[in-house]
Length: 365
Image 1 (cartoon, rainbow, N blue to C red):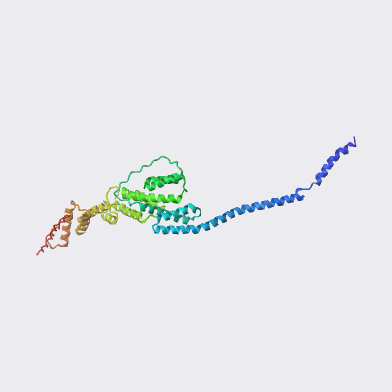
Image 2 (cartoon, one colour):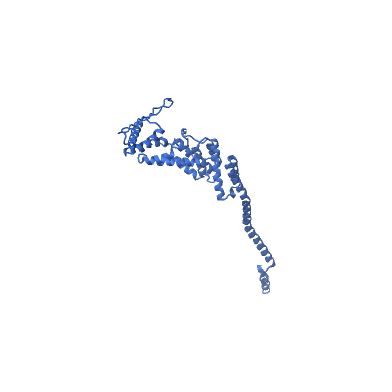
């Protein structure tokens, strides 16, 4: 029984000895090889992660450097084409820049391209469209409030169709829907279309509808996309003068004359909601101001304004007043005479008979 005890304990002792003979992980040779491989792989991975962005940046910088001279060249050529009247060629160059070089455009270049694009669209439109006259009667636009669920490209094509047919209200509404759907979709082209539509609608409101304030508002909105051309800017200037002069109506006739004397030679048929043209406002203001001058005893000055009014439109109702004022003016200038000369009659258009000459006044002894 006692001999079997050492035999049972022997395997336990051997296991303890083997456990003591086993080396730690870092003291084994194979473990060091594994660590070297892992460290090497880690270094390679870190290098790759750091090198990829650097490589991308290098490629981007290279692309930008190569694109810059092309963009600059095409912008200069487009400016030359616009100056020499080749508007379609200029538009093709600008389209190429927007389609192929948009990622490489700086903010300054993008602003220049946008302004040139707006100018080009305006010139192309004016080349095939006569200037709207003040006698045309616009048709009421039909605007549907139904939400538009079409895609960006469909909306853009629809807006182009409205632009071609000069349906400015519908074009603007479609462009606004497109902007609400995708603010960045063909941004420069959409800006140019907004400019043309707002500019032309503003001019039409002023010259055709007589809606002066809404027309000025449209032109001001258009100016946010590109500078106004000389014609539209001039229309806006005369319209502002018209509104300023009209604000003095029945308050200060001298101020009314001051402003409308600037407006009616440039835009004689410019009118507001009352229907009175700039010429008619000047004529009536001249009559009313002449009456005030006559009441103050300034007959000769009153005569000048009445003559201006009658030269614009001969009014039989004003003629007696004009004659009375002329007589008073003559009396002021010739206080020693007893009576003014008879008025020279105005010859009838088409008459072959010349009016008689006035008699010489007889001096008083």
